[in-house]
Amino acid sequence: MPLSSIQAAFEQRFQHKPLVVRAPGRVNLIGEHTDYNGGFVLPAAINREIFFAVGLNNTTQIRLYSFDQQEAYETENTAIQPSQIHWANYLLGVVAQFEKRGISVPGFDCVFGGNIPIGAGLSSSAAVECGLAYALNSLLNSGLERMDLARMSQLAEHEYAGVQCGIMDQFASLFGKAGHVVRLDCRSLEYAYFPFDSERYQLVLCNSGVKHSLASSEYNTRRQECERGVAILQKYYPEVKSLRDATLAQLEEHRTELGDVVWRRCSYVVEENLRVESACQSLNAGDLQAFGQQMYGSHAGLRDKYEVSCPELDVLVELAQGFPGVLGSRMMGGGFGGCTINMVETGQVEAFVQHATQGYQERLGLPLETYQTTIVAGVSPVEVAAS
Ligand code: GAF
Image 1: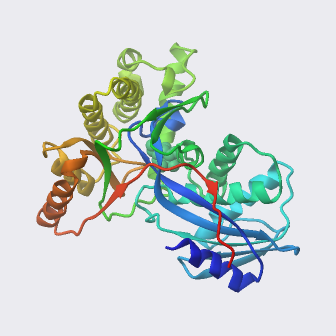
Image 2 (image 1 turned 120 degrees about the horizontal axis):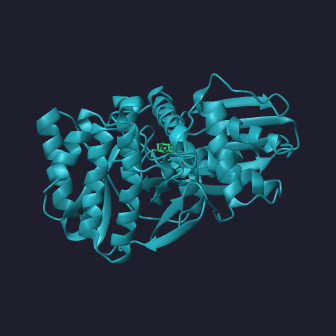
C-alpha cells in the first residue's frame, strides 16, 4: 500500500492537507503472555506499517475512512462510544482516552491503511491505535509522552475492543528502534535496546493463514487463570503481586490447590520469564544458537502448558526445527493462529522459505505466506513531498 495513496485519498475526500504518520507492527522474539503478568518481553517494530493521514477539520465531526476496508465512519466528537463497525473501535477507543485525560478532541478527518496482515499476530490493531494517538497528540499539542500514548492505546483495546491485552504491542509500535530489539520490563516499564545482527541473521515470519481472534474469549481466559494462580499463591506468599514474583518451587508446593490447568498456565509464565532473561544474556554474548534454543522452549511451553498454539503453527515449527541455518522458531503473539517467527542465517533464508512452503503444502495442503522482516523505528511522522 503506497503511502501516496493514503495521502491522495485524504486530500480527495476532505480537501485539506493532513499530517502523515506511520505506525509499525511488531514481532516478539521471546516472552509471550508475560506482559500482563508483570514480566519481560523482547519485541521489535517491523517494516509492516499502517499509514495515517489526519487533520483537524474545524467542525464537531470525526470522519474516519479505512482505505483497506473502503468504508467510512462518522460521528460527533461529543458522542464517542463503541461502534458496530469493528475497525472504527480501535480509533474511537483512542479518542475516548484523550477525553478521559481531559483533553477534548475537536472534529478531525482521518484516512488510514497499510500492509500489516490482519489476524496474523503482527499487531495491526496496536499500530492503528498508536498511529492515531501519536497524530492526535501532535495535532492537539497535548504534550503526552510516548509511554502515555502506549498506555492510552492499550486501554483503548481493553475498553473498545474487549481484549484485556498487556502493553507489549503498543509499546513496540511506539518505542521500536531500527536494527534493535527492545527488552521491556512490563512492571516497571524500564526498557533496554539490544542490537540485532541483521547482516548475519534474518527474522522470517511464516503465516499459518489461521486467523487468530484475540477477542475470542481464550485470551481473556488465560489472563484470568493467571490471576487465579496469583490469588492462591498470595495466601502463602503475600509478596507475590503477579506471576513475575512467583517461583517454580512455590507452584510445585501448592500444585494440588492450584489444580492442573492453573498450575500449567502459571508454570509456563514463570518459565517463560526465565527464558527471556537467559535469551537476553545469550544475545549479549552473541550466542544466537543458545537464543534459538530458548525460542524452541518457548514454543513447547505455549503448545503444551499454555495451550495457545494450533496444529498449523506446530507443523511450521516442526518444519523449521533441524533445518540447516535455522536457529530458533516459535509461535508468536496471542496464539490460536497467526505467524511463527524464525531466526535464520541470512544465507539460508531462501532455502528455508522454499522448504517451509513445500512442507506446509505437503503436510497440510495449505499455501504458506512468508515475510522477511526488517527492524525499523517506532511510530513517526512522515515527510511528504508537496503535491
Ligand atoms: C497479544 C497481546 F496484545 C499482547 O499484550 C501479549 O499479551 C501477546 O498477545 C502475547 O504475548 O499480542
